[in-house]
Amino acid sequence: MSVSVIGALFASFVIGPADIPVADLFAQLLEGGDTPEALIAREIRLPRALLGALVGGVLGLAGAALQGFLRNPLAEPGIVGASAGAAFGAVVAIYFGLAAVFPLALPLLGMAGALMVVA
Image (cartoon, rainbow, N blue to C red; front, top):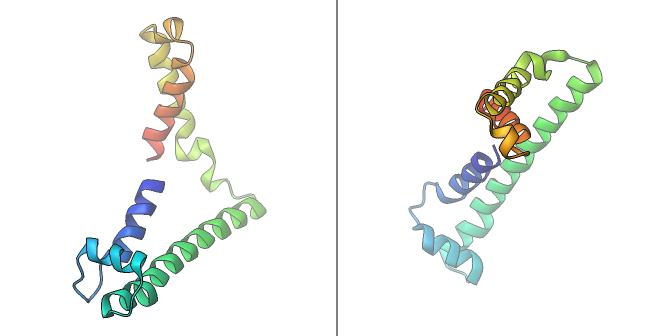
């Protein structure tokens, strides 16, 4: 999920009505200067991208806090399916004998199963 957030942040910084190559955009951001590209990068695109990421994070945090406050079981692991995915990963580790050979196989495959179900 964090990879998609970083990708969206990068896309928000790079995409805009002014056609500026990515290398020039980052060079103007780091070097400064008074060129139109530097002004667009520093004054328009960077604040827009950072503010969008900040607002998205705060909205997610507010939603999680509200669900916790109201004790809403909508995001409970059993309803989402993470518990079943973790159990499936653990069964795979036990069935193929990975848990006997590699002790961390059971929790790692459990986490992988939960992540595959949720993602």
